[in-house]
Image 1 (cartoon, rainbow, N blue to C red):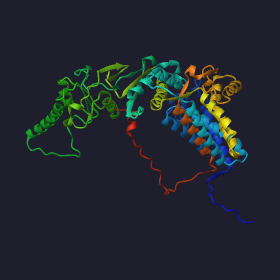
Image 2: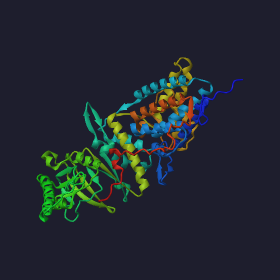
Image 3: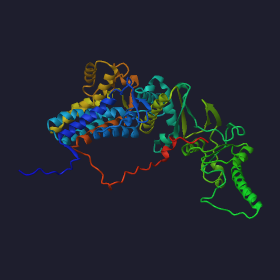
Image 4: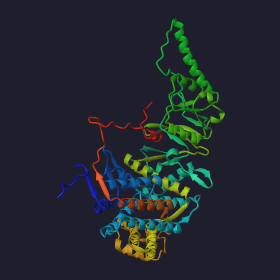
Length: 556
C-alpha cells in the first residue's frame, strides 16, 4: 500500500461535490426563511441589535440582512443580492431573496438525482428569458404626468411597509420629491439623483402628519450673529462661497520680526483691510444672505451685519450644493471672482425657525428648484429611521417609474402568470432540461404563496384557486390581496409593481441561484502569507463625499 498523499495543509477544510451544493442550498434557504415573513402588507417586523447595542426595527429586506453577521459564504452572497437590488432599483429586496431561495430549493431534488448543475443552470437561464418575455407582454405603459396612477403605484410599493397605515402621506412625499429633482436629459429620458439632491431631515417631535417636502432646502444652522442679522428675508439674493472669510494665515509657520512698535499696528491694520476688502467685494452685489462652507471671522461678521446681510457659516458641502441647485446660485471659490450671474435669486423666502430646541434655516418657495429637503417629523427616533427607509424605497420606485413608465401587476399576479406560461412552454423544451425548467416555473409561485402565508389564509386552497385562474396564462391581473388574503383583480385594487423592479428581481434571483449551484468545492482556512510578528495594520477609512451627510458636524 502506498502512503496517503497529503496535498492540502491540515488547517484547510475542503468540502466538495454534492455535499457543498446541499450546504449552499440549506444556507440560502435559511436566509430566505429569515426574511420570508417580511413580504407583503401583512408583514412582520424584525428587531435587530447591532454591535453598539443600538436597535433597528424594520421589515426592509436589505436593512435586515445588512445587520446580520453570517458565517456561511453562500449566505453572504445571498445578502449581496438584496444589496444589489437595493442599489439598482431600491425595491423588491425581500422578494429577490425569497425567489432565489425557492429556486435553489427546487434544484435540490435534481442534484440528488445526479443532474449536472450546468444543465440546471441552462434550464434556469432559458426560463429567465421566457419570464422576462412574459413580463414584457403583460406590462402596461402609464403616463408619468398622471398623478393618481403614480400615487397608486408608489402606494402599493409602500403598502408592504410599516408606514402603510399613514396612507398617502409617504407616497405623496416621495412623488413630490422625485418630480422636483428630475432632470430632463433629452430624448425623453429623465435622470433623478436621489442621493445628491434629496435630503431627508429627521426631526424628532411633532406628528408624522407634519412631514412635508420643502420647495427648497433646510439646513441645521442659525445665522452667525442672531441678534444683529435678519432671520427672515423675502426674495433673498443669495451668494454661496467656498472660501473662508477670515484673514489668511500662512501655509507654514511664518515668523515676522518687527523693529518698531508701529509696525505691529500696521500688520493688524493689513489684516483688517484684507477682510474689509473681501467683504466689500461681496457687498458690491447687494446680497441679503451669504453662505460659506468655511469659517467667518468676527470682523467679517461685523461688516456683513452692518450692511444688513445675514450670514451662515460652515455649511456642509452637500448642503451647499443643494442650496445652489434650489436657488440657482453658483458656488464661488474666491470672492474676487464673483459675478452678477452667480447670485441666486430663485428663492422666495429665507427664514430661521426654531423646531424643538434647534434652529433650522429654511430657504424655501424656490421658483424651479432642482433640489429639495424632506422634513420628517415623528414621535421617536426608531420610528423616524423606519419611515426614512420606507421613504427611500418609495422614492426609488417613483424614480423607476419616471425613468421607465411601465407597470406589471403586483400581489403575486405577475409571478403566477409567468409560472403558468412557463409550465405550458415546458412541454416544448427538449431533452433533459425540461424538468429543471418546469421546476423553475413552479419556483416562481413562492412569492404569491408567501403572500398568502403572511395573510394567514388557507395556503393550499388559495394557491390552487389562483393556479386555476391563471392556468393558460390568462387573467394576468388576478392575484392575492395582501391585506385580506382574498383573490382579487389587481387592476381594480390598484396593486402594481414597477416593471424594472420585477425584471431586476427575476434576473438577480435566477442568476444568483445559478451561481450558487455551480459551486462544487469550498476550501476554507486559507491564511494570508505574512511576515512573522507583523500585525495586520488597520485599513485607513477613506471618507467620500457621499458620507459627508452622515457625519456629525461639530457645533460652531
